[in-house]
View 1: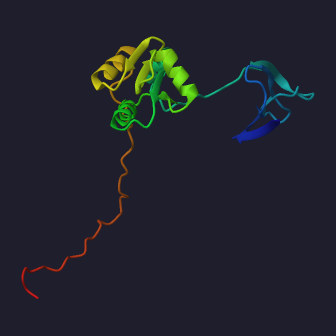
View 2: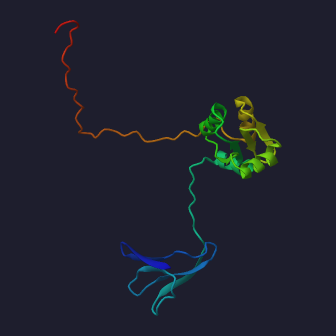
Length: 192
């Protein structure tokens, strides 16, 4: 599906086409020209007669990628993806999950409550005890040991804490009155 948009800025008109549902890597032919009225036009269609200053342009896919993860975390998770093998094992598994969340580490959880999870754990750790932390292909920590787990995450390049988010502090409106606090009646002890 394609949609044509027409923008007018001052005396210039700009037409652009949005392609939806098309392969991202596909290039598009776009024409830039000045129409009979002197407006600059961008279009995917060849210009009508009387167009001046015709230019053909190739347009490739334009994407904007956003992520909540900082670059250092993205890089570490690409090189050393983290997998947590766990089940409802009480404080040890809760502490393991809390550590990963506290450090802002993206991870995959494999529940060892079922046969498929147990097979994955056996293949990774060589035994069936949890929690187990796997960082990348080779770094494995069996059982909950916060110091050992932190060391593995440090070696993989994960930050010690999630990136802090900065927010703009809201400022009061210039003419906003100060908030008024209603006076409280005095209390006296022991009197009725």
